[in-house]
Amino acid sequence: MSNGDQNLNVIKEKIGFIGGGNMAKAICEGIVKKNIIKYSQVYISAARNESLEYWQKKGAHATTINGSVVDEADIIFLAVKPHILPEAIANILDYKNEKDKSYKSKLFVSILAGITIAQLERALDFTENRIIRVMPNTPMMVGEGCTVFCPGQRATESDVNVVKTILEVSGVCKQVPESLINAVGALSGSGPAFVYLMIEALADGGVKQGIPREMAVQFAAQTVLGASKMVLDSGKHTGQLKDEVCSPGGTTITGIHALEKAGVRGALMDAVEAAAKKSAELGEKKH
Ligand SMILES: NC(=O)C1=CN([C@@H]2O[C@H](COP(=O)(O)OP(=O)(O)OC[C@H]3O[C@@H](n4cnc5c(N)ncnc54)[C@H](O)[C@@H]3O)[C@@H](O)[C@H]2O)C=CC1
Ligand SMILES: O=C(O)[C@@H]1CCC=N1
Image: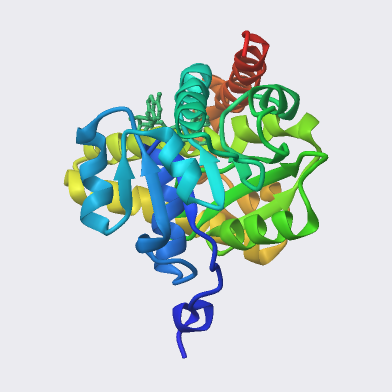
């Protein structure tokens, strides 16, 4: 029996997404591939009809009306850009008041960088404030995500369990204190982009040495994949693994010297620090 068959129908709830962009697609694709939900259980809203075509083709329910997603779904992921949150909530409230709806029973899951649980509770004060703050990453799309979550005070144990089930089928998933979410967002939320840049640069290096582009990209990506697996599976310190590749007087230590002279370690630390700082700044803006 495949893993997919084992997971069949685990989630009975209807899942909503306010915002149907890159991260919503990654979360959904990941969980549908693992058979824990079907696209027919998914309700999406986005700003423009053009953004909805992707979802309609997949068999999800797609609309430009945020309130109708909250109406239909049991668990609603907030998946717009952080600065759009006030507008997205205003759209929900317009619909709620016009249709005389109560959204008390709904669970909200925010993936917005920087926006704190306290800010979300203020924005969602028309609900019971069952909120879980999550920081996912796009490799969830291929089952290799790295996600953290932090439940708000009003989230129940069953809320946490269902959200954990949704997130952990698509990779690593851990609960962390909210104080760590900006830092984790900088490392694993933004991190895929940092790694793509490194893969591209490694491939460029290969191309410069005469390797055809397609082969260079494949080899660079496979090398990063293999090295990651070595770190995760061997339990060895990264320094030891590096030493095992560096023959005395050999090619690798010569390359490492070039990287150290260029300050690659410091540059990567700076990148994580800058992203974490930016995340905190996003939360400091008025919401
Ligand atoms: N892309 C990533 O790797 C990650 C993103 N995030 C967070 O996920 C959130 C979404 O990011 P992306 O998916 O990359 O953005 P995106 O730009 O790809 O998607 C945003 C979506 O929001 C929709 N939208 C815009 N205004 C709207 C409104 N008023 N009502 C409803 N929908 C509206 C757009 O039509 C689009 O479908 C952000 O808050 C970001 O901080 C978190 C972790 C990783
Ligand atoms: O760039 C951003 O702001 C979002 C949050 C983490 C990854 N992408």
